[in-house]
Image (cartoon, rainbow, N blue to C red; front, side, top):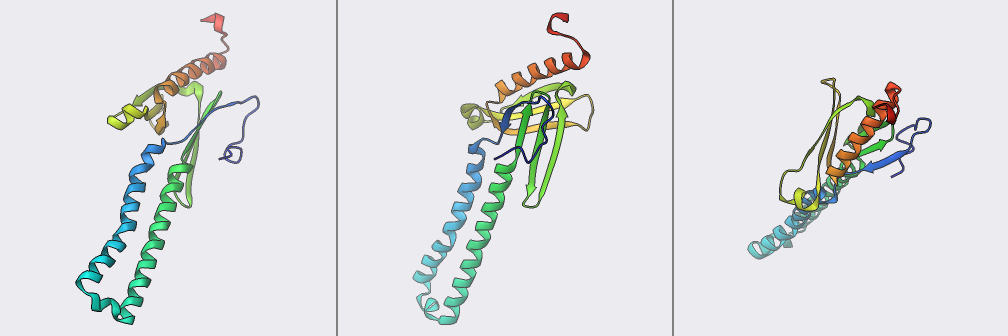
Length: 184
């Protein structure tokens, strides 16, 4: 995904990370939709074994084909929507700020940004077997304000990202206060 159309880079700003959700977090949705795709086939086998004469009726058969087609199209739309929400949630970390792009539905997106020097606390939550084994987690970034904060949901390598954000925040804070590295 090209990030140039999402953000307008500031002068001398470099993109350090473009973060997405870990691929494993989409797997439950994919398994559920795959199961839902198999349901009509199971119903067809059940109907053909229990009520074979029902499928010989042209009107009933046409209705079942139409209902099945509508069902499959609805599932494809659901899969497309869920994948867009999964893939288009992106967090861009530059050397000056963090840009949070959250895709809520097909036609709803929220873009917010946070300057690095405003960061007060960075927390990583890794809860569960799979997040621990696959090394992904949720990174919460808090500021002094109660209503400003950004959350990176289910990103890979959450702990190194947390550490890097703390370093970038300290560096940007020193720069914002006019202090050099030697002034500490």
